[in-house]
Length: 370
Ligand SMILES: Nc1ncnc2c1ncn2[C@@H]1O[C@H](COP(=O)(O)OP(=O)(O)O)[C@@H](O)[C@H]1O
Ligand SMILES: [Mg+2]
Image (cartoon, rainbow, N blue to C red; front, side, top):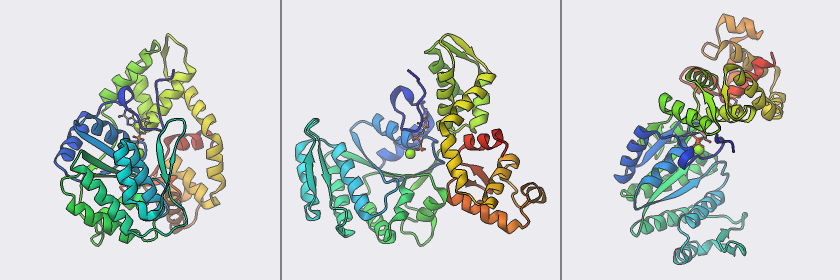
């Protein structure tokens, strides 16, 4: 079986330890400190939170992923389903149903597993006060067994029409829940900063920030070597460094490339640099349709801006060299195209630089000589 996992939370043997981050996060949790976790996509934020929380005795984790929520109904739904998975005891479930009874939930029991689930009428208008009551319920339960409350992909709270009032409720409850740690994790830096650092945001300075980036190089290298060894595949440091270079050390991308590399190499072999090129083709084949579709949505300017960043890098997109290469006449048009590419989540801003969200997409543009 391929030992490299990507596109999902990794736990246990798949989780490469990040001792110093785990230690800091653990200390914040046990002292009831609220934490803001920021980092690009696929850097391992969710995995870090889950693995750290699992290690802390006498705590249980309420993990609420709010990725792509659109309405308050969605938010309440995500919270209740997380509560159900957090504590499967009948009396807990009964208490929960009581708290949300005014929302007229329909309760169903899976006939196969016996697990209950709750759903709401998607069209009913839910009052923000329901959120307040749920948070209060979670806090009351915290006095029985300690909870760690995690809101993952928290920037998507901004999708809600009335997000300001929702955020205000969260903030005011959180203030009173001083012994219960809340963790807010998110990838779209601009939006996370908007929530936490705008002076008029109610979250202003309410949580300690932790930045998540690449894994510790040496530890990750040993992890990769060990995984390959499980198939008697030998990989040396030089080849692993080449993988790091190709993927800009993004943990998720490293794992995806290693997964492809594993799939094209034999049992009992030594992996070399050429195998990396072949495994890139495996990734291109997997992603081709998506890349082509992405490109089909772009205007001519946007595509030229994108390919120019692929070739020249995204540091000085308004320089003479960039203008000349892209064939775009006005620097302002380049800026506009780049901004749109960020909105489309193809690029992201890192300090003053535009970077590709997926280094493989960039490689593909170069490979295809766009
Ligand atoms: N500690 C880790 N050890 C090994 N792989 C990791 C680790 N953290 C992240 N990854 C890789 O990155 C992928 C995305 O991890 P995830 O925790 O979902 O990131 P994020 O929440 O930042 O988007 C995983 O599927 C895995 O391939
Ligand atoms: Mg995540």
